[in-house]
Image (cartoon, rainbow, N blue to C red; front, side, top):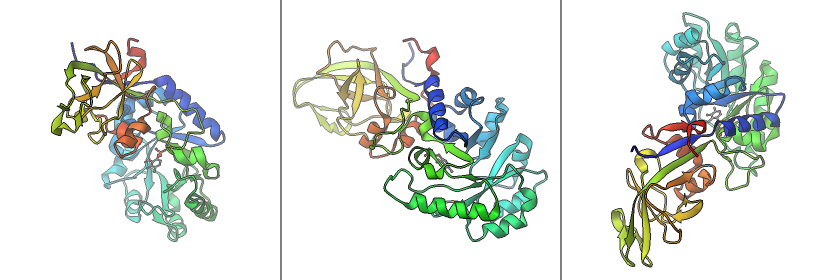
Length: 359
Ligand SMILES: Cc1ncc(COP(=O)(O)O)c(C=O)c1O
């Protein structure tokens, strides 16, 4: 029988999250961010599930948008990084994509493209990653007025919205609001943490990313909305052994048995996206109980100490993160963030909709 490692995608949870997030800002339009294969969940599956509820989708690059269009997704799609090459403007026209221009070079490409393209503008209000400079925007809006229309939006991105006591979010928001008034464009400011924690950022369009997937972006602070995890990462136990007190487990023997121990080997490793940096003791759920990671994560396997859990056997399913074990907790153990963990689940791991999983 094939390996039982899989990422179960909970569509009901996804739809619940979208509804709950939209309810926070009922007068805004909501775009569902499905870049990077919908944060690892499978862009097409997520787009198909949300196409009648989301007002638009957003991706990072045109290739991601073209993939969705080729598979029948007709919802508006915003390309957040705009064109990387002039040719992207032709693709945008062909597939009816909205390009967000963050640089003057991009505006020039769009201006000289063979066909008209729906244009949004991105302004840098302090994150200093992407965006036109605030000072240049009024002149550029005038120069490229013929490229803008009633659907055009001014976008900015928040640098610190997950830091609830950092007023940089307020500073960025006032700057972009003043600019929007000057150039008479609607706005898009909020990402997930802003939507959850900074109502002053709500605007015509909000951008729903990680929260849509049920992840609290301000962990370890508790989330103020009952989000439901959309991905459960599962694998099965493929071997069991007794390890005598004092013996080590795995590469480098970084875990040693403090007592005679029962160790289970699970069929998932860093080749599947489970982080190698997870420390000894990181929890894995077995029969609903937490078993600590024992030793270094290998490419295809990891080991857990199941001495204290009864009746564990080869073939039993375990949960690495998901509906019963917070991905934020696992990310903290690997010294990273949940965004990275869910996005890096590798192509080797089948994504399975929960309606197809035998319970
Ligand atoms: C421009 C932009 N908007 C929105 C988002 C969504 O952010 P989050 O996942 O925190 O909601 C991202 C994510 O990286 C982004 O780059």
